[in-house]
Amino acid sequence: MSSNPLDDPAADPFALAATAAAEIAEKTGVERHDIALTLGSGWGSAADLIGETTATIPANEITGFSKPALVGHTGTLRSVLLPSGKRALVIGARTHYYEGHGVRRVVHSVRTAAATGASTMILTNGAGGIRETWAPGTPVLISDHINLTADSPLEGATFIDLTDLYSARLRAIARQIEPSLDEGVYTQLRGPHYETPAEVQMVKAIGGHLVGMSTALEAIAAREAGMEVLGMSLVTNLAAGISATPLSHAEVIESGQLAEPVISALLARIVAAL
Image (cartoon, rainbow, N blue to C red; front, side, top):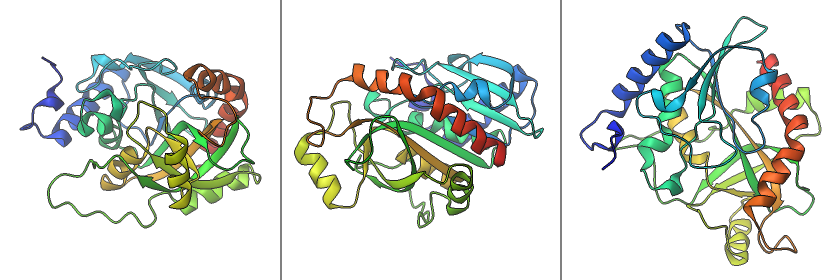
């Protein structure tokens, strides 16, 4: 039986996020964070470039967090002092929906970030690209999402408007830093299997440009918490049926490693402009 308190249906996930935030403040010595970043596949080096790391905590020492199940995620929480004097909380401990722990645990990191005081949430991921012009290694701004998990982090009669979920203001700042940045609609599927070619064509038909297994549920929770959201995908591979070769996790990791220095430096420049 899991010992994670979020698995108790009677638990208050927001109270647990507040507890986690208090523990982060105690362990880092930082009372408040301003910006939070979840660094997905290929984005990890940004943590070293955005500023001075003053504290690093194993995430599983904080209430509600678990060790990451995926190679490429560090399993730590870092407090980073930005050159501007602001504080960033870098989350290297993403819980994916396909792990089967429930949505509360998927979005706990975002709710905890909000409880630390962060008003900006930067969500990054590695994704399959549907546009043939997006070669592996291409960073893409997320303009909107399609949630195909058939799930939501919102509980009960909680109605949250998602019209402008992915901030136009933050995307404009990103394009000022790198005018060549393209944008597209991210589609979250349940995973952990990759999409079939037919599913990719379905996503394309309904307006999706990127396919992946994270981010959308987190973004909804961030909006519920009142945060401004910037989403970015690294195209790690062309999606099934778009690519001429079968998909593999090794390919995703390799693409992320090759692109990491460039996209991490780009993200660091964007963070500096916020």
